[in-house]
Amino acid sequence: MENYLYGAAVQGIQSFIFQTNELQDIAGASNLVEEICTKMFDDYGKNGVQGESIVRAAGNIKFLFSKREDCEKAVMEFPKKVMEAAPGITISQAVVKYEEESKFGEYVEELERRLRMQRNMPMPSLTFGFMSMERNRKTGLPAVERDGNDYLDMPTKAKKKKRKDLSEKCFGEQVKAEKYAFDIKNITGNNDWIAVIHADGNGLGKIIETIGHNQKKLQKFSPALDKATEIAAQTAFSIIHSRIEKDKKINKDQIIPIRPVVLGGDDFTVICRASFALEYAEAFIREFEAQALKQTGEKLTCCAGIAFIKSSFPFYYGYNLAEELCSAAKKASKKEAEIRGLDYTPSSLMFHKVQDSFVVDYKLIEKRELTPYKGHSWKCGPYYINKEREEADKDLTGLMTTDVLTNYMEQLAKDDKNVVKSKIRQWMSAMHESPYYAEQLARRAMDVLSDDSKDLFKCITSPAYTIEDENQKEKTMYYPAYDTLSIYSVINQTTK
Image 1 (cartoon, rainbow, N blue to C red):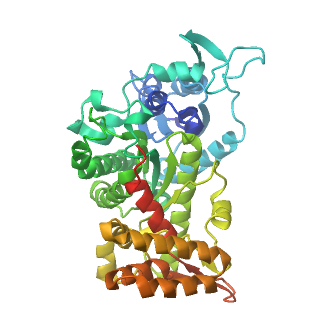
Image 2 (cartoon, helix red, strand yellow):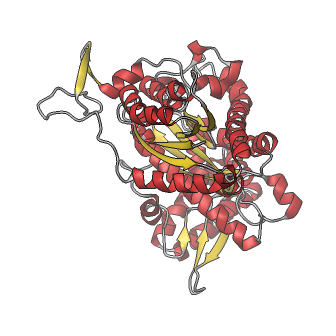
Image 3 (cartoon, rainbow, N blue to C red):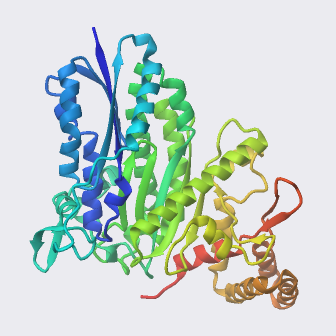
């Protein structure tokens, strides 16, 4: 009996979600994306259809059809259904004949190869229009409906219909729907800084390669990973929930200052108040490791990127930066694992506070903003997470951790440390002129600071670590000063 292994991959998710800065539209877009692999595919994967679901999550669908006509119906109708429900989203599809169960892994590999080919032949968008058409003032897309003084395009109209969103999965039963944030003013706190956090699991590709040849294991793994990510998000929220409830001076209505954007597979993206973003991301990463092992039986770690931006800044650029920071953390963690011979990629995170009026590639940011002088860098990340792991095997000793960074920031927050902050800023300015000039300023600072302030100043202005290039001809020293002051300012600065 011939079976057909069907595969679909969703493209354009991020651009669809972040077309505007309206949190209500972002919430609706997130829900639409969530429904693509679940409710929207139910017409082809349920209701008497003969077949078996393999994967249906995180923008990926794999379904084993027992009848050719059922598979043909999905191929013909599903992309149109998705593009009409979520204009701007596109679908790539592929089908492979499934004849022998023992060759399941080979069929999956061939399916993925065909999907990659289809991604290079995207379907035409439904959002094109004539130049003379009225357009949505915020997205620039052709308008299809008027809403008061606003004009709605097709994607925005679809998003506004979806009030229910990912907050249920992110918060669990701890929060009622009326406490969900639909306005950016509910996200900000004492200042206008917000954070876009993007977290992604490490080592998932290797695990999929291992279990991908086993149909039963792959079927069980996907929902188990979803559950692990969901529990991790809820646990991270529980850790900071009490602090949010106490913050009544800022938020009288007690609206939760967190907007989930993506929550599925090993991906987690949220927009949240800047003051607790580091703690929130760290809590999620810790719990993700624990839950991934518990739910799937596989060892998975996680890296994250945090982009600190002003609330008026385009979310799309904030997300792109967060994704780049996450990728940079992954790359550094993998390299560290290779150097030290670890059998896992250590969990870590990176962050950046956007000071410029626009965001460029992170490598350019590193060169332009984070390099005060040749051989010296403010890019001290990534910051590794599990201190208890360090104490157990000493694998990460000598590298920066979130605990060390948090300790520096908490000490700077004390009332008697204003002079220290001032001296650190002067030293950083001097570093742009010359490290030798900065060293002279540091010596003078040590003469006027108290004993405990001297230790703090020395720790923050000394290199956390030094890395030599591949040819061992040049070395770069990495300082925690910039990151410490950045995280201090987004948490403690008051502008309201």
